[in-house]
Amino acid sequence: MSIPITSVVIGPEEEAAVLSVLRSGRLAQGPMVAELERSFAELCGVPHAVAVSNGTVALVAALEALGLQPGDEVITTPFSFAATLNAILESGATVRFADIRDDFTIDPDSVKALVNGRTKAILPVHLYGLPADMTALTAIADTAGLAIVEDAAQAHGARVGDRAVGSFGVGCFSMYATKNLQCGEGGLITTSDDAIADRLRLLRNQGMRVRYQYEAPGHNWRLTDLQAAIAVPQVGRLAETTARRASNAARLTAGLADLPGLTTPFVPEGRSHVWHQYTVRIGADAPLSRDDLGKRLDEQQIGYGLYYPRLMHHYDCYTGHPQIGTDETPRALRAAEEALSLPVHQHLTDDDVDQVIEAVRGAFNA
Image (cartoon, rainbow, N blue to C red; front, side):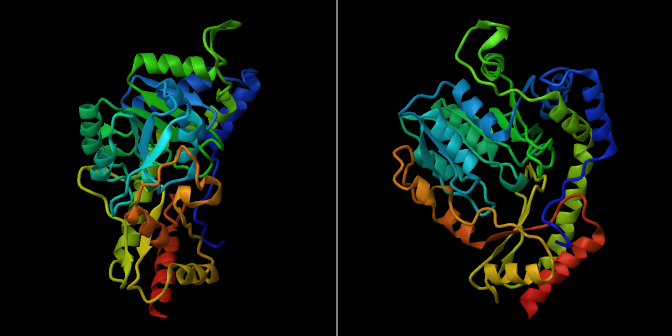
């Protein structure tokens, strides 16, 4: 692709940090992991960040630390990556699906309608880098006595008011290679609860605090210092990275604002977007379909993404699953049919962004 949907660039700071780990001989979880945890906890304004092997493990570990049992229900969105669903299934809980708002995030009114005596947690997804309405969701959780697990895999550094995502409950972040903060594979869990943090550290290390003294059945969910070394320099650059993505997003929005049937993303008041993806909607009143636009972009060598072309539970492997509710979510279904993401990453030049705009406008005006 001439302009890819994402670009992975490893710079000299990361290279130097990895080399220092290699020369130290401390390759497993060590001082570099500790530094990543410290700096990310500070970024999120919480006392604890626990590094794990990937973002899916972050979700699985958070749910296990909360002690979910079969028959418990977790409310989440159906418009997300399957890791969200898979983690809940692995916990043994039943998944209930709330609908979404037009900003692609979970609708608190839909969540409230699903709360019942079996509900134990709400699991919002801060999709594409935009936080869910955590003010409303926190009020629902507080009233009903529910836990909150934030799927913040795409939202490093995003904020609601003066609080960072990951500070409203147990925050789960991915550091997969294409994320705004990445180390190839990795995850981070944030919490202000000392007991949850202690439980997470126990679970990730085979149930040990002291070697060969097992306190609980655990797992090998550790992150290596090699991976942490890639991520640590990026924490310090995250504000700069986010600002560049926001600038690219603003340029895209201005350039695509008047196209018929195309809806550009918006940021609700009181929430900050970190632009992991820039996702437009191609409605029924557009002069071309989403697939047609994709073909035109392919011809122009412009990368794009269909995140996510079907709702998670509409794939055959989930049909009839006893842990998956059959809640109707018409707005999420429509979003799955209309959403298309355009390049917005920090490595784009202004000329690149202008080329993306010209390609989309050319497709609409053909």
